[in-house]
Image 1 (cartoon, helix red, strand yellow):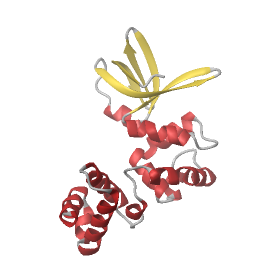
Image 2: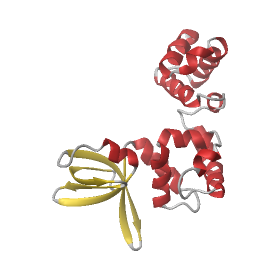
Image 3: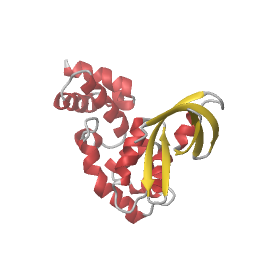
Length: 199
C-alpha cells in the first residue's frame, strides 16, 4: 500500500496532480484542498495517498490531511459508492464539514454534492453516522446542541487532549453553553470557559 509520496510537483490542475519521486511520475487524483495547498511547480511536495487496485486499473488518490483520507476510506465502505464518488464527497466541503453533515443528518448539504442524490445521502447517514459518533473526538451530547456543533466538537477534542475525561469535558461545555452562551461562538473562547468550569 502506498500511504504517501514525497516528490517534485510536475503539474497541477483541478482534481489532478503529478509528482515525480525516484524518477517515476505519479498521476494522482486529488481533493480540491490538495490543489489549493500545493506549492509552485518544481517544489518538493509530500502527499498523503490511497492506492485503489481494480482488475483493470491501479489509481492513486491524494489527500491534504489524514482526516480526508480516513473519511474517504469510510465513505468507500458505503454500498454503491466508488472511489471517484468518494473523492468528490470528501473534496466538496472538506472532511470536517462532511463529517458534521453526516452526524447532523444534514441531507441538504450532502445532496448539494454533485452525483449525490437523496437516497445515496440517506444511505451515507445510515451507514456512517454511528461510526462517526463513536470516534473519540465526536460526542453526540455536544454535537446535537444545535448550531455551532463544529466549534463544540473541536473544544471537546481539545479538552480530552488536555487530559480531561469525555464525561467531565462534556459537562463543562454544557455548563458554559447554559451559563455563558456567548462564549460558545469560538473554539478558543469555549475552551477557556470550559477549563474554568472543569477546574
